[in-house]
Image (cartoon, rainbow, N blue to C red; front, side):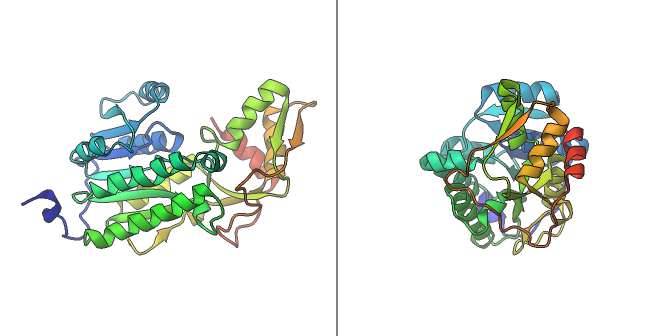
Length: 298
């Protein structure tokens, strides 16, 4: 009997200490946090896959665990993914082209990473206990390439529950990750160091965000739950906050700037929304709270 035929038994309970985990994009900010969380819960067999050698070496030093194997690879490589998936029970999928502007400029690469790569994993996933897909608020009210790939990705993940007669494929929609590598705060730090000013597109633009520790807590908890609801799209409502771009910029300068630091308004880039359609009843976070949150980021 093949592994694919052995599935179709409904949701199976996850044993963190015995099961084998794969974290795609495991050297990114979220991926590293997920790996650390799994280690803290007692995981003994974790594989991280990433195509960036420098980030792999950084993650190896940072995580420093004999229970984590860092593999160099691209999820668009169908044969490699097929072989890798035979060795895991649970997948946390975080790998993606994530920046709106880069996806707008490189739609083929956004397709390869966010759709073709995802499909490679799903096509080889019939023996998994759980697949957790990290999606984005950009999948709501789509108006850019990145959001389109994330929305289609959600459809592919949810269809897998039907194809494999299972309820183990979960979709979690997260807002922006505050302070992650390549995030607006990361970019502002570089701009401030270079010219003592930071750039924003529209002062009144609003965005939703979640801290990496809170996102990790929610994603891993949902991923390991005994009774997932595959019909739902999960939102980390408890942890989600909202900010005006100008307020975040002012808070950032209070923490990292000086008396001569300034804000430059550049105008919106192609594909940028003024307001995301995520959660309507989240109130704006005051500058004082943003200052405190930025100050606590490592």
